[in-house]
Length: 367
Image (cartoon, rainbow, N blue to C red; front, side):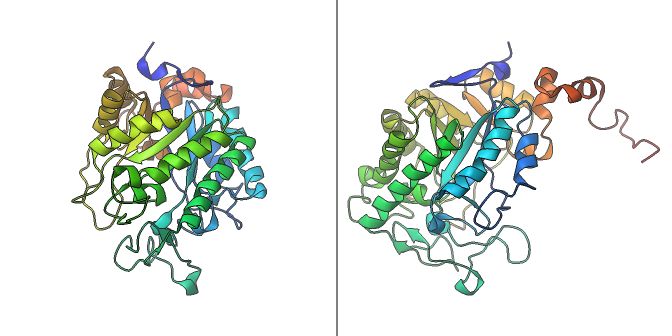
């Protein structure tokens, strides 16, 4: 059996193969931060064909934790009911339905990334709101200075993650991911770039990791014991004095004790401007290092665009799971072309007899 086709078991959940769709925000939520059935249902249904895992996009645990007004939310029962429809369509295609929980922290109150003035801070007159963070340090020039979180704020945030996790289980999701990367709230507490507190939630490694560890442990009390919990970590910052790979490995050993089952290894995003390297599968070495040095299962992400790349990463022991993002946005049938049996019956004959693109490089005359 090819490595990509090997099932992966996490607690009592089995993924039928080692390829997954990572959480990617589409910024298409309906009013009330609900899934829009005209968009989200077909989007996630088509991207579940042939997949082992599909993680629904970053879903805020509180209104102030939204990155943009167009994000999904999970702080009330109406949202949970609507999200259950997404879990259903994913499971109907044979993939495990996952959900990413997020709090944007000091990256909150932004516009959608496209259009004039996109991916920019929202003024109050345009529907913006006051972000929260570890310290009064804005994410970038022009962004609002976040309100430093008090002990009451922190206790509330931990409870918000736990309550959202309980709703996610009720909605039928079978894997949960906590977003602790890309400069969002949990990452901002980890990084000295954003966290300059002098209390129990800042200072040294123990203080800066306290909030994430509390969230993991508390979520484990509301998320079913038989279901896996994933943490997405920015394994390093690309700024002087920031969070490091060595910090990540030290933290992952603790998170495994707290109840995390797999680490989704991304990087960067703590502040702007920031310069990052890039290239094919450029972040995969981070997943390899965490897997090797912490002994915890990992997912590799980042410009993995072909199934051959994914097979190689798994065969070399770099990771336990490959998450392919943009490639599957463009070509959701990629896994099913690898194994036609994973496609719905009406598609199987077409997959077996059709190539993608004209074989001779020319357009057919009728086009």
